[in-house]
Length: 438
Ligand code: GDP
Ligand code: GDP
Image (cartoon, rainbow, N blue to C red; front, side, top):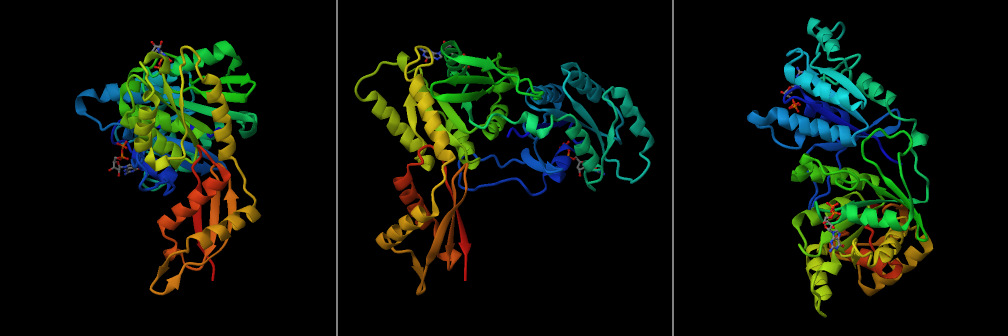
């Protein structure tokens, strides 16, 4: 369930992004027209021995500037230590071991976290160049000879990475636990919410079997179910310096979203909506995760009869691209509506996992296509033969039709709305796949 995360760190120009691209191939998912989708190639997925692995190229997070390279590398290494299961330190065989390599190696070693040392640009197959042996001095164990450009040695590298990962089934969470990522700007009230919840409920601060990252998740059990609150920046520990750099916080949010079932986007009622909130929402949409917007500190603002309505209007506008998202107005301080938040999380998680019977879908399709005729173009009319749900999390529907070109986005949107009207699906994105059949 929880896909391991591998972070790539190293000096500029040693070949981190080349290695990253080689590892993920063309697998980066890119969905256009979604606000906030990170198009940078810094976060992706690969598979090794049937095991999914998430990879971050920390070097891609911020552009290097000559005067602060060491500082940037420290931030990258810190992020890796905090959030990755294994860190890959990339070095360049042509440069040999340089002072910065030593510095970062020390930092990683001190953390006690698994590190794999990649000596890149070993382009000749066979015996490595003489400089290769210097890398043993970094004290990180056996260096792995890699040529990222040619793609040699990357298998050995992944093999080594996998040695540090717990066996897959051990890392598996209980099936009925709902994983929740609470995401929001610093000071919005994330840790207050966790504190409130842990004060009210039976909970375990978990050290989930075998995970090696520093993040500590909180497992809560109450009348609404079992929940795993994923540690996002600043929840269970003091926020780090890098958390204030937007790109880092976006990357952290992205990692938390990948691990969650439901993403709670927390907005400070006193500050209001910020652009980063819709970026995060866009990531949840892209990842197919459920989403809730929680306006916190509702106790702290002066309210009249219009306040909530006005707030809703702003949110309706800013989150128009995912109008299925529910809002809730809470106070992490007084606990106001925190129970409703739990209920909502459960509802959204169920919707995200909902399965709709094919018969019901096709009844709906018949009614919908009668009410609004499918589009035509140059005398040809779209015919939709059949619809079925292919998968859950998020609910994904396949429509079989005579001609894909005719199945315009607007008609897909129309059908999506009919499905939502009939089955609710509050809080979850849905996906539509169009297939042609002769
Ligand atoms: P980054 O700054 O660490 O992400 O480094 P890049 O991936 O941008 O690579 C820096 C330069 O090294 C580019 O010109 C790459 O083509 C080159 N490079 C990367 N890997 C290899 C390799 O395995 N062999 C050789 N010869 N060049 C490489
Ligand atoms: P985090 O950085 O998102 O974890 O935010 P914190 O939980 O540390 O909260 C930041 C500040 O907001 C603290 O001073 C909290 O006491 C305050 N705060 C958090 N939630 C509420 C709330 O619901 N109402 C009020 N009035 N203050 C809150």
